[in-house]
Image 1 (cartoon, rainbow, N blue to C red):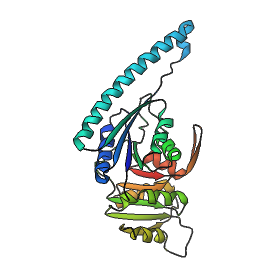
Image 2 (cartoon, rainbow, N blue to C red; image 1 turned 180 degrees about the horizontal axis):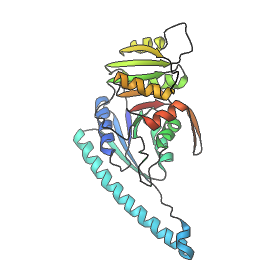
Image 3 (cartoon, rainbow, N blue to C red; image 1 turned 30 degrees about the vertical axis):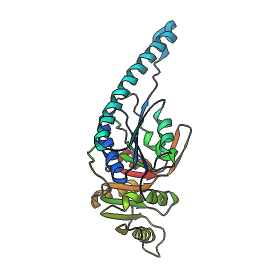
Length: 278
């Protein structure tokens, strides 16, 4: 199994270059087609600040905003295309206008994997969307690799921790991640609070992955006094994992997101890249 199309979100922030490097590395490894996506957000100033001249003043401000945003997008495109040309990867640039929460999930549906960043909670960017990773995971039907907003990740996927619960979402994530798992040095299958006491938790999926040539081991643990999300992060640190694979739980209705506890915790507190599927 390989990735044929890879989508990388470029939001114009300071970590775009690292996300692009990760995408380029993966695209080169799989001889994949890379798509760079940038979203220009609309700007809606408060009408009350302009009095009777609100409509005209707001329209002028919005036009100036769009002009500046389009100029910035063109510069970003030039930088990205220059970097891609050096890497020799087949590439397409897409610059769209609208809301990233709507646009990125749509484009992710036509990719084998999407790479994007966790939103920095301290970001003062008016276009930053804290919920973007969740919208893409729940709305695309495709695997999403979310990169933490802190730390440097030049490589990923050598030592992988799979958070295994035996659910449909977990199975989807494991199989979506197979191209990465097959080239990992070690894959640890972690079952937390397993219900079935009659066999080794995670053994069946570990055996299945082994038939694909994946170097796996199954283990179990109990989360007594801390959350499942904290257990996953703690075990990832103990294993030196540079990638976490897990199912995403929840649903979205219009712009309302309802996430499972572990999904929400990991998206907010991740300490390593996380591949999620829903």
